[in-house]
Image (tube, rainbow, N blue to C red; front, side, top):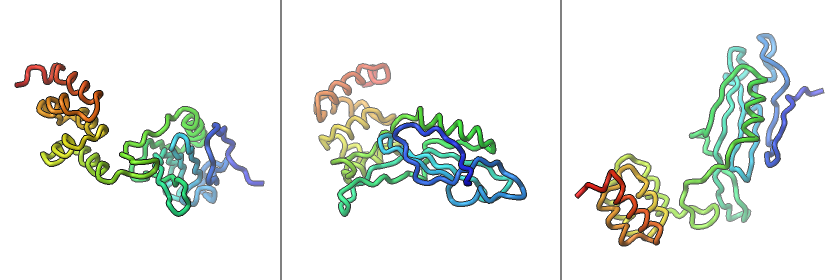
Length: 205
């Protein structure tokens, strides 16, 4: 009989892969601690995945590594469905322990409590990236905004890009003045006006 580790699985989670056993590491038998993944579960509504590994594989001195992975929806034109693609390079959360019961508790708590992932990409429709705008958004992740990117955003008439500029640490008073008059929508104009009257910008000339 296979001695799987009992887990309380919260509604909405799908177990895609499971070799997580109710056994603890032993120097003479590490059979249950092999493979690229011991457990992989995902929640389509939350757009999160939970993945459990033992690293180094089959090494008694290793440990459990539990990660939460953000999932992006990508529209697949061949299947006319939405694939979930994990951002494995940037785990949302990581927990390491040699204690199996602590890992069990952490998995169950994450499944119950973790909030949905909010995809920051700029999309033109569900699962389809708006390439030009998304390229500009990625440039906004830099600390300093180039004059070219700043000009593209101000003249883009793109609500989300202009809102991201307003929230950026490198936003300038001239940007606020422009957007308070020429923002893509009323909400952008109002937000720019409010920032102009805030302490950091109020006394600037």
